Length: 131
Length: 252
Image 1: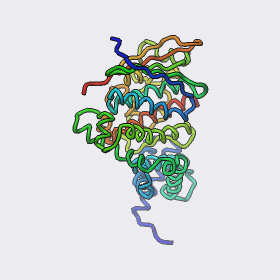
Image 2: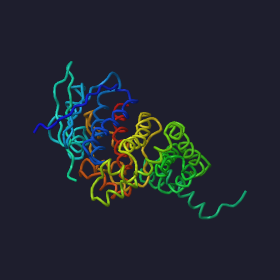
Image 3: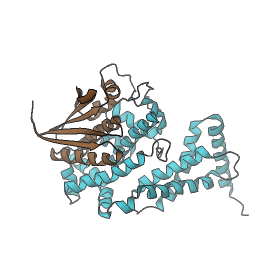
Image 4: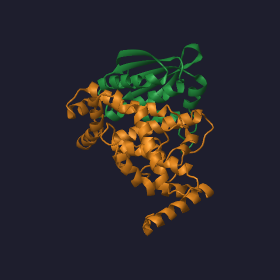
């Protein structure tokens, strides 16, 4: 179902000073969809962990597609070698805390798309829970 | 020189025994006992810094970091008691925290107060609604706007983020305050740099247990908060902080 009506694009420096700004924007967008406090926190955590993988120099693009009760977030370009490997399917070792496990916990689904210049774009989807 | 009471003398001897077990034999259980024995001292010192725009619980955590450093750095040939040695460490850690974060200077008082009142509001609403409240509901409860609630959320998390950027060798080690059981969470080591497992060892038992509950059991923050007796906001901060510290550890 393609019900993403609005889209917000953002390019942010990767330096730590702007992480709080990105969090605030993620929170503001999720609030518009009436996400619960905990759901907002989950989405912010997912974005924060991916930004951490992106490094601290240069910039990263984020896009937010906003539906009636869901948000699709794209973040990239991220490093193919670091992030894609960490997210690929495979046997999960019990007790291992990986980026994939974190994302599986905090968003409904995620995937990897090719990005410009050899990097990848990570796609996150989160839907508002029942009231 | 005044005679020390026998009970104080016994406590000092027990501390020394535990310090020897920790420093000479690597007995981390002894370290944990030392931390628990001196947490009342940390709480007492932390109370002196209450009312400056930061939750007492958070000040206690920072103070606990000073206590751990004192335990880790204590030299056994010192004549001084651990409590005497730890006190300036705890106070120094708390003062440094306020100075480095500039909390009282940079953050408007209204936002500090809103941040401080949010935990209670979230707890009340979660109990009343039987689910995590929305930002609009929190705003209504606190008679403010959703935008201000979001800003207040970031006030708390922003200071945590700054704190994390100090890195693993800096001054932001996680506290073992109120550890719950102390058992290992069972996360295993991994060679994958993006897998955070190796750095789990860096965390206190409580933080490991919170991560285990969140990412292995899949419990929501509200349930974890109930289990460990902390606010949901505090659990959220600990999760973020733990993951960031672990990553810093991997990169370090």
